Amino acid sequence: MRILVLGGDGYLGWPTALHLSARNHDVGVVDNFARRLYDCEMGVDSLVPIRQLQRRVTTWKEVSGHTVQPFIGDLTDEVFVEETIREFAPEAIVHFAEQRSAPYSMIDRKHAVYTQVNNVVGTLNLLYAIAEIDPSIHLVKLGTMGEYGTPNIDIEEGFIEITHKGRTDILPYPKQPGSFYHLSKVHDSHNIHFACRIWGLRSTDLNQGIVYGQETPETMLHRDLRTRFDYDGVFGTVLNRFAVQAAVGYPLTVYGKGGQTRGMLDIRDTLACVELACVNPPEPGEYRVFNQFTESFSVIDLAEWTAKIAGGDVTIDNVPDPRVEKEEHYYNAVATQLPALGLKPHFLEDATIEVLIETAKQHKDRVEFDAIRPTVNWRSTKSQVSVAKGAAGD
Ligand code: NAD
Ligand code: USQ
Image (cartoon, rainbow, N blue to C red; front, side, top):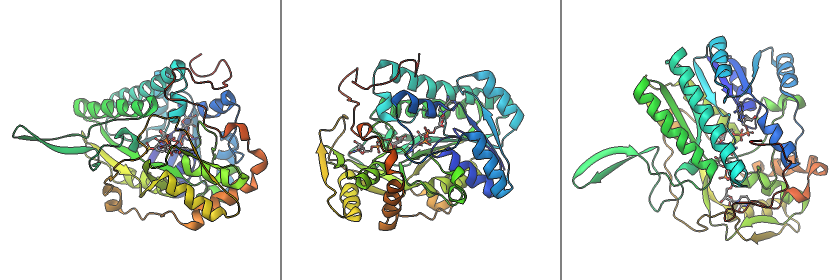
């Protein structure tokens, strides 16, 4: 297939592009390097050094013989979006290209506005371009399990059958997202669903859980192919952060009681899920939702597991929760559609955490201790985060 990967310079987009390319798909990647700029803004860097996109693409060609075609530009620029889709003529577009940090979106007004404009406008430009250029293109969109929040009933896969006053319908599952970032994904979902209804587009919304891990078979082929590894309080996700904290002897930062339970998956399963969605497209006009995670864990269980694997004197610090979220709640989410298409999950095991801690130890001299502490406070409209001026939205 011809597959265009948007956000192809990012944590998940780059290894996904390699995974698809290694399986003989014709792959293009699109990125505006916004993620690298957030690092400059926050004064941090990926724990594992990463190469520039051009170097990554050249090395991939040398290592594998496959070509990945880069397109540098911004999805909020509608002319760029149209020209790129016309030139590459994809059968599927995998859309990772959004500002994806909940804390970043909660820093202050400017970062919330930037996040929603970047994400919602980028996706809207894409929907218009697909409708005008080739409505048969399958949009595979990365959504998030956080769109649903933590309701006191089972979370279904996108839709729920409701009987109300004697009448029954199948309706979009209610959304209760926990940040302006997560809200941007909800807005995207509504826009995509609507575009499928009015223009007959086809789309798969992948409501993905939290991803952990850093290595994939393709990124391990050469040091120039490695993907990023974030551990800071704004962009680091929970298990990746705990592994780095354990590696450098920083008390594991469990927010509140740590009873927050989330769907999670190994980075290798992200790649497999995306390919399964691409090669099994929906019908024209169909908007389908797959819940993309393989297991659920509470934050405290992850911290205790990491501490056990790390051994020694690793401790857990129950810091006051900077977010507004339930610290104890019911959580039972359905995820049957991707396994039905053939997903064979990599479940979390001791060895996975060991590899993460080992990777962190190899690069421990790059850890900025000041960046680990959570600094974004959901209860404040202006968090005291030291950000460089001139970044998002300026
Ligand atoms: P990332 O920030 O590492 O990658 C996103 C990439 O998109 C970056 O390289 C960035 O420069 C690019 N980008 C952002 N805005 C753009 C724009 N307007 N035009 C062009 N490029 C743009 O994030 P990631 O962790 O790889 O996540 C990828 C996607 O998966 C996101 O949509 C995210 O919401 C979703 N997701 C991630 C996780 C996770 O745990 N990492 C979990 C669930 C869902
Ligand atoms: N948490 C801690 N300690 C930490 C970091 C996080 O206790 O040091 C807690 C948070 O309070 C939260 C949970 O761990 O309850 C998950 O936080 P996270 O930062 O790992 O994940 P989240 O903010 O939800 O966002 C990440 C990605 C986002 C994606 C989402 C999937 O950054 O792009 O959409 O995971 S989901 O959570 O399913 O919505």
